[in-house]
Image 1 (cartoon, rainbow, N blue to C red):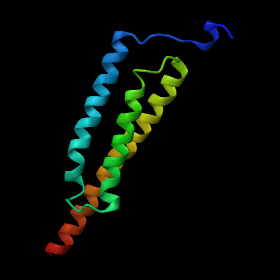
Image 2: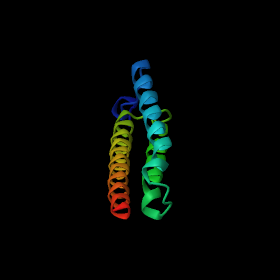
Image 3: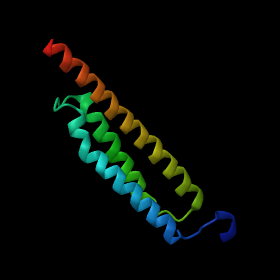
Image 4: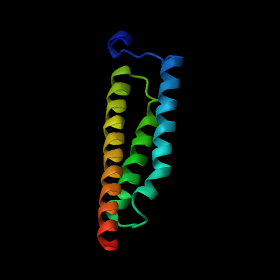
Length: 105
């Protein structure tokens, strides 16, 4: 198999900048995620943190993968996990707010 069929290609500087920015955004949401759980450290409340950590780990793989196709696949998987983590954060906020209002009334 020749080198051309594998489609190895180095990342451009713009791609590295975008990936770094995506990692920074993920880390910021990871720092916010304990607040979203309402400090109820149960399994579901910690799920968003776990999903975001896996997403950050997958995104970190993009810097070492040489194959363009695998970089694209890993990036899409990381984005899906990131969106799932953010949706879980939103659900945690909605549920803790709803449960909090019920306890107050």
